[in-house]
Length: 84
Image 1 (cartoon, rainbow, N blue to C red):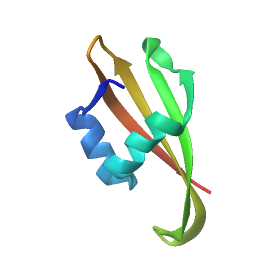
Image 2: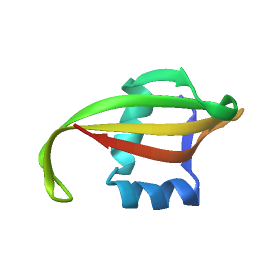
Image 3: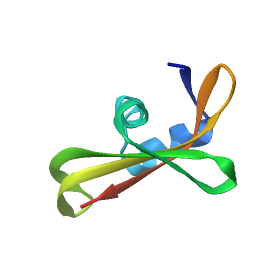
């Protein structure tokens, strides 16, 4: 497996959206892979959450890193999270 690097934007979005580096890495390794805009690769993986985010309680947190694959590494460009 290629090394995984995080852009500064991705790091900022992870903090803002509540995703950890470990969740992002696990999403890349275990998640569903699909084509995103601008020839990027995105991954989607659900985690048991059973906690509050903001004022609401959610059972599932879905983490979706968007990546750019290069010869020797995968660069995480941004990270989205969805709470259900």
